[in-house]
Length: 241
Image (cartoon, rainbow, N blue to C red; front, side):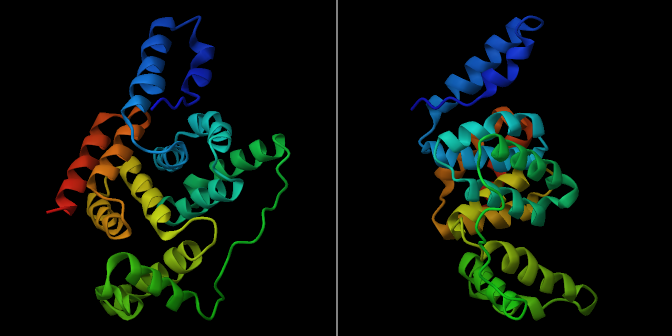
C-alpha cells in the first residue's frame, strides 16, 4: 500500500542545501514506511497527527494537515484530535496546533466554528465520563471518580469529568479512535510508560490489537524516532502479557 505524506513538500526548502538528506529521508518516510502498513489512509493520518501533537512537531503538522483532509479526515475529526490532546499534553502544548489548524481551515474556506459536538452537561459529565472509562478499561473503573486517597481524589474526579466526560463523550470520533490517538500522544511525548501500557490495554479492549498498534508505531516512527518508538513497542508487549 502506497500512501504519500507531505514530508517531501515540507523538506523541499532544503533541497538546495541538503539534497542527500531530502532524498534518503523522503524515500524512507514517503515510500518505505507507508508501503509497510495495513492501515487505511484515514487511520494512518489520524495517528500521525496525534503523534505530531505529542512530539510538538508543529511544522510537520502544518504540512501534513491538508493532506490528512484530502485523505478523508473531516475538519471535525482533526479538531477533535487537537482538543483531546489538551487532556494529555496540556493547553501549553496544544494552543499552537489549534491556531495552525484554524489558519489552515480558513485558507481552505472551511467555515469556523464547526458544529457543536458536545453531548454532556455540567451535571452529568462526571457520570458520563466514568461510563466511558468503564467501557474502555472494564468494570474495575466503576466509581473511579470517588476512589483513591482523599488528598488526590479531586484528580480522579477531574479524570472522569474532564478527561473522559468533556472529551471522550464528544461527537466526531468513537471510543476506539479516541484510544488510538491517546496512545499516540503518550507514545510521542515519552516518559509516560505506565500510562502508555494502560492505554495499550484500553486499545486492546476497543479492538485495536497488538499488531494494529505495532503498525501504528511503525508509521509514526519517522516523526518521533527510534527510541520512543521502541519504548512504545515494549509497552504494547507488556500490555499483552
